[in-house]
Length: 284
Image (cartoon, rainbow, N blue to C red; front, side, top):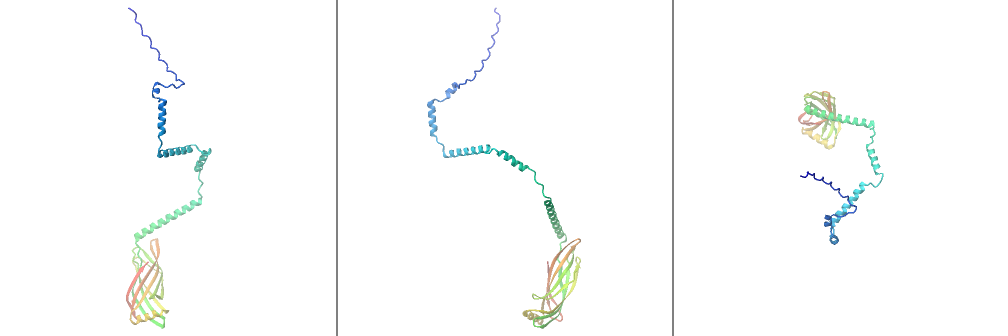
């Protein structure tokens, strides 16, 4: 019996061939490589295909965009990068300090605006809480003592007017700092009388006696004739108008305004002329 013999060892794999310097086509590439006749046929076929106008336009746009990108990416000037750095440094440099005078003016303007807002809100609150009302001018008695004509167009008269002033406010005290009353016939002033300043508390009513004296007052001929006609008919029409500067106070808060009042009066003839009818109004 022959002894057991071991199989021979496997031979090592052959190393891959080194790539050749010359490009030798493989059998597959040889199979797919067209022949010269086929190449000439394909070149003739491509020459017969012409691009459309739209294709030409798209290709020209692509070429122009590529040229623009290349110009952006490759700067024209060699020192452009340095210029960009200098611009960045200028933008990032420290700002100069603001002049103190500018800060002072800004602070003053801010304080002024805050004061205006505060006083506006305070005034609105006062008007909503207090609800101020204007004083009222009225009359209940007047006397026409005399009317005389010394010469044509010259008039003398004596008239007494009882003025009633009332303060309808519940929380405001008023003071009449300036008061002037005028007596009118038609639209001509025939007498003027001032009133001394006086005060009124809330819901208070006061009476002021005003004595009008007319001395040698010149009237237009038409007015003089009409006044004589009214005296003869026992119906004289006078008008009393007043201008007042009123100061209203609510504790430490006070404000002033101008007040205008007028009364249309119908009087009987002198010497005992009395009040027959009246219409009084008051407005700011």
